[in-house]
Image (cartoon, rainbow, N blue to C red):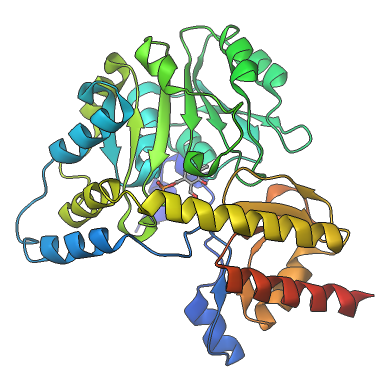
Length: 368
Ligand SMILES: Cc1ncc(COP(=O)(O)O)c(C=O)c1O
């Protein structure tokens, strides 16, 4: 009998499966500890809005009925809030799915996708799925190297991804930097502004990329309910793009791609005036605390505009990860991003941040 691996498309063999790291349950069982603080996946430590929780409970009893395939209510609420036409909005199972739709709709075999290296995992995944060519442009000092990225765009380039803030570093590109960059990009290439963390940004130089959508520039803006809205477990996000682009995304979207519970929760969360400010305030206080602690510990870090901090622990990041895990805290190792003495830590609650700093202090002291 033919082996499945001989039947698999060549391009699929190049896909590296997403590595989620150990789950809290696995760590607890392995180490016999009762609590694990997970600061590894940039989740929101405060949890969803109570209004969203109530909406989920109500929607649950209607689970026998297929969801609204067009997410009409949510789309209209987003369009109102963002002051864009509803036709420009495409809702997905997380912004991950919108990235996938961009690949399906626009990228043919041998065409090119440009992104900064290290990338968010979905960019190379999408390129490989579509049998596209990848231009991975090395970061420069933990920021996008926009000159090199513009140079990497050729006539076959269909998508160029910009994660702003840049995961895993937390740095941002300013409106002026992006403006100059956009002038250099041909209109055969769609620039994707991946703004999963935009709510956390407080730097006034951050761009309003919806202006590009409004004036019809070839682009797509990606946002999510996974971060400030704390609904990562439901998988819901959205893209905003000029109508011709969003129409193409809707053509490749699966019918019923977003579940009814997720739609109801996202809508309720949008209508909760406290959800985002509460998340942002916790994040801002945690960001100041962690950055100040890193300074006191003499550790270099990338000043962050997101809900995580990238810090140089000056030891092997996998060893640091193991030592922190034994103390009940998980983070992301920098070695997966090509920086083997750095870690990425998600900003938690004040108590979680203090526990992490105490654990890190012990780990670093042990090394001396
Ligand atoms: C840069 C970036 N883009 C997109 C996403 C995906 O978010 P979602 O949960 O909406 O799929 C993440 C999630 O961590 C991210 O870091």
